[in-house]
Image 1 (spheres, rainbow, N blue to C red):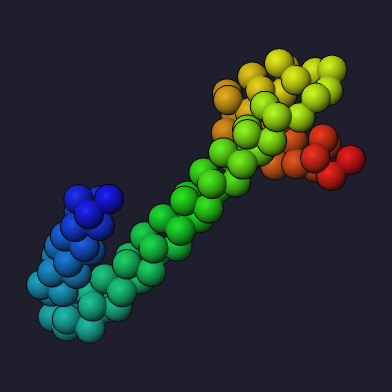
Image 2: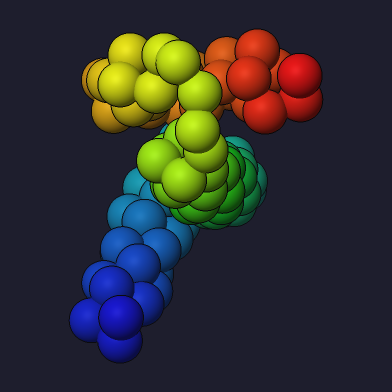
Length: 96
């Protein structure tokens, strides 16, 4: 886990240095703004990817523990479609 955090920090710092050192239209302000935008976008996508993966795992575990007729089909759907299958499973089976 520590290696992943170090990698993410190094990636963010290199992104900042690349965009901050790039001179667009003889003014560093747009490059700095772009670096901040890229960091925010990266963090937004990263957080949603982690949350989606956690949700997918919870739905897969729920499907494996629950007793119903089409269990094998739902496990295959969840395994092959990821988060989209987890959302479908949540609304079709779990909330039923």
